[in-house]
Length: 344
Image: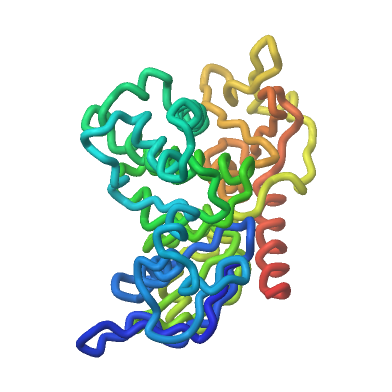
């Protein structure tokens, strides 16, 4: 666990970056720090690995005051990923990833073997290892940055707007990669972003800061969206926070019915019983089948696009399991929102 106990940070000239911060960041989870520029979220992150020293108060990692530890040793034990990846331009990708293990005294063969393993883990082909950072795309560089941060298997991973410099499609891919890695590795991740959609997608808990380094609210995404602490948090979450809440609830609990037969619209299936389109005579409309893991928001979108108002449901292999109506989706969405508000 990472703990901030009455932490202040004032810079020369009197600017307060963090004001009286008391916050617990649970082990094994993703805590996302959000807020506008200048709200203190990056300063907060950097106080964990002593890249910034607090003016007063205490920062603890696994119960140990970070100021009582050697700064260099502390940083080698904490993974750190920044927006521009921070790779060494004169080293190959493999040697970039092997940097921290080598600093920790690992043999070169062991360090490079670990680096090659991690490049595969973050979805990079083996030939990437021999390239230099300038030969990679922005998204590939960010993957290398994540691999380097994980190389010595640190329990804590700090990520400062790591996906902010890539295009939206690559950003979504990198977010998927991080979620997959976290499911496998269970690191304690502190993630800084100014994008509330990214925070909702990635965070187990979200801490919202306002200018002056004041923590306004820290809560799980569903609680934050259902019951923001004040007008500032509600404004930061945006007018579509109800839709964001739907993105956190899946289709798993919604009932299914057999696909309709004999009506004007029928659901076409391929020979393997995978849905392909809705058909009415010569007219067809493509169908986007959904799985139990898809969100209510995706289901609502698909039900509105469907000429029947029905969503085709499939199993992990894409085989039809049934359909769910727009009315059922809307009713369940309303109940989910009510439950979230009561729980909050």
